[in-house]
Image (cartoon, rainbow, N blue to C red; front, top):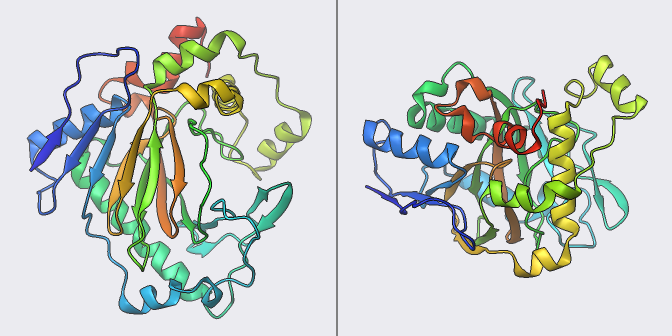
Length: 317
């Protein structure tokens, strides 16, 4: 059973569309697949209240106390730093840092817990691939599977509405298709805010967007393979728009939004460079990132790349 909200075109004050897939629904049903790809590529969110990914009893017990898996707990509860897993190499990245209130920190996983956490994240990566293959068969063979992110720390402050940009992982115009799951072992909700559609957001901030050229350090890191290639004009535009939106206090106060409460055991899917979102609270979530080539989309004109190129009046890759 599916529940798709009506989409009558963008109107001022709109928020993103939702498609709810009830437990027990066969993801291979053609009607559902058509609704899912239309929602996803249209900048909506696909919600699975009971997704099917479950922790083992041992995993649940292991993560129930972060002291079991981590050497240090940050002083500020803003959901960072995160644990990054590379599914191709099968290992957690040791030197993934995040800035927490001006300090560079990394999640230091205990050696005793590392094999179990890596196994959990590897199993999650394979599960998401199965879900995506069933729900979006036309994407099979074209998606590039990237990192898995585990967020073991609690968030008790509101993250600004934002679109995702690539940081050290330039997408070069590809969509960031991400599968999220709330794996909290004590049934704590993960709460998000979802904002307006991508195009009105871009129209609002594009006149003030003046992306800078990449510095020589960024270019060198890309050539050496330390980051995933050079940043294109698209990557720089997306990063600039993200920053402008997050820093605009009036926009953050008045922008249209809806609040979503994702219970433990739930999953949700979105192309997060199209979907304005921000975490509000929660602890213990996993997400798998895939890169979706624009050419593989059913309707590439709905991609963030093509929308941004149309509004900017220039090619960006």
